[in-house]
Length: 465
Image (cartoon, rainbow, N blue to C red; front, side, top):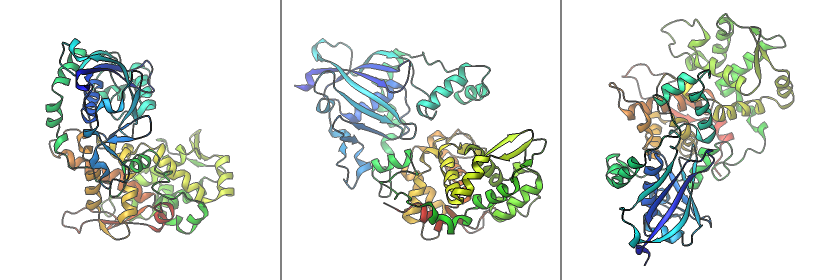
């Protein structure tokens, strides 16, 4: 009888050196639903992201609510026991947590033991080595960068890292006694966190595999969107993107000699005004009609254009001047603006820190889940619909998102999540030309609700597979 057996399993976080791992004794008939909770508690995660199990033959096992149409043959983790997927010592299964940071764990069956020899209540963690990385740190690469900044006082981001974490992070610290205490209380912990009462995630037709692919690689997800065969098809729609209109003006002004920057390193006001005119003041000037533009620092769209060009490797600063790199000029001449725009789009999704775009604290996961907005536009963006409808859809798909908001006396966590999705996702996609807004700005509470719809440029880029 399997319920008379105890499994000794080793949970190892992949890609981290020195390794982070736990050795846990569990009943052989433990369901994978309970194993998910055991892993979360033992490792020190917060259970605030999606997860999946995958066995050696590729079968996916997880929350059945995420595969309502049954297209995946997605097995219900509450109906699959550990003994059903691990039958021999040495066998392993994979557990992935947080599809954005992509924390992969190897779950290995080390020993099969008789239940009669166990005195401690199960599950029981017998060995814990090092604490897991912070949530939302950016996966394995982000964790290594975080550690470097945290432990090097000379690092330019040292203070920011300590402030973000809330003190000193000791990767060696782990409290085995606390882990076992929490394991014994795991059911109530999950209930208290509201995990059992959350509505099932609604991915609007995407299955978990497609969602995973979309979040991991939004510009190269063939199961969701058709690959763009020829960038030249974008040509006719490019100027609908404010970022392109501003980039054209800036690149023309840079020419061969570049532009002399101000003492603060900003573009001269004349150049800023030219870019505003190109984009449309109603789009990029948030205080239009309430004040005058005095600096580049006031205009996100202008700043974003500069930042994306620099991150994409097209511009550089030298001796107080902003210069267009010769390689960029040659590429623009030979490949044209469609390829140039694709590079800016790729940079926006892969290199840009979206939190830079506003002053809100927390809700860093907005960038991780942001690509789902592309699917929403593809599904329902053909008609004008309220922006709030899209924010509702985002929170229905990712109900844990508000939990990463910082406590505020004047706004709930959900309201903060809505603000961040609007200021980072909606605003970024507007500047990139993927959607249009009506009206462009909303300032008064009694105004009609702001609406959005996808653009023709979006339709060229993101045709559903």
